[in-house]
Length: 116
Length: 117
Image: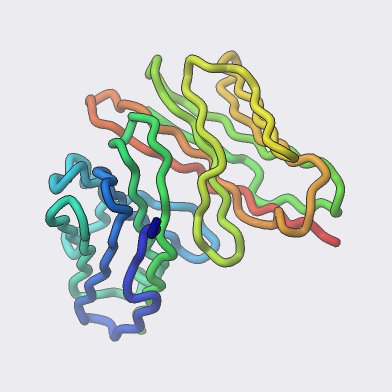
């Protein structure tokens, strides 16, 4: 079946503009995660959805970042007033169960965001 | 607090050598899960293995093997007879419950493995 998809694959934006990143998880996966990966770095957890609710938003770096999920499916990560330090690859993953329940995560190919 | 440490930032080996990637974790949970993921140069992370905290039996899958030792809080990954296609960044991860009762999925910083022909 189809894996996790993300769009756009690449996004170049000017500093100060808003961007919206989209994630389509695997059908039936109730848990969805967003991570940020700066060049050559590890994964930085941003937010986790269980269904449509977000029990863990602890990783969002500032109030410029927000995310939502509708219909236990698509999720969007929005970054307002982008800054150059927001440049990174944004990864989305989904799993059958929530965090702590042992479900492996399936990752999308990521969105490479470049803020000029 | 939960933590995953991958002290080796980068390892280079010559093809056909064996290599072990270290992973040390911290958790107060009695029930937790450990994972290894591979991120090849193409960028997409791929799940390799999951172990739960009650199963310390080592696992072998082809050239890959994993050694889980609760006594040392380690979950090491060994590649036998490495190949160039094994070149990637490998991440160790921990899934469990935090002290505040929420669930957490924590990744280590990754180990970049370079296998030279």
